[in-house]
Image (cartoon, rainbow, N blue to C red; front, side):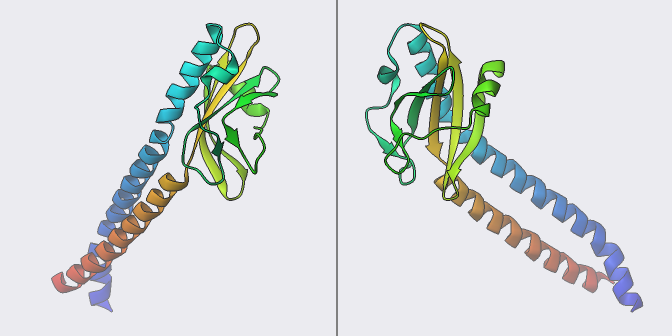
Length: 180
């Protein structure tokens, strides 16, 4: 019993350090993957808003292909008026233009941009960037892309971090047992 107490005294600080390091590494990688998922949409939304402000019609800022967002990984663009009504879209959800919650537009208008994870239904998640525009009429350019691949990568990283954490705890406990 005394032997086990000594082992635990040696091992416990190592276990805490291992837990903190594995948690930090996983969190940093997860956040990097998720934040990077916004990169193409930032460019699409900002460029689209700029073009509309320069007089281009909303349909001219859309990618050429229609995207069924429940199935495709391709980026898409949706243009809304100032009240959140659909003007133009390269995206469909079950064959219809998708709509976003009205609250996201207010945040974008106040802050110049809004980046959000949008989940129109349980099996469809997108990284979305919303940029307001002013012109002949005010509105918003929304650019999005599926998070499916990013979330698959995060799941793999989670498994790796868990494996490393458990393995390290076992190995360090065994080493502490041998030291005492």
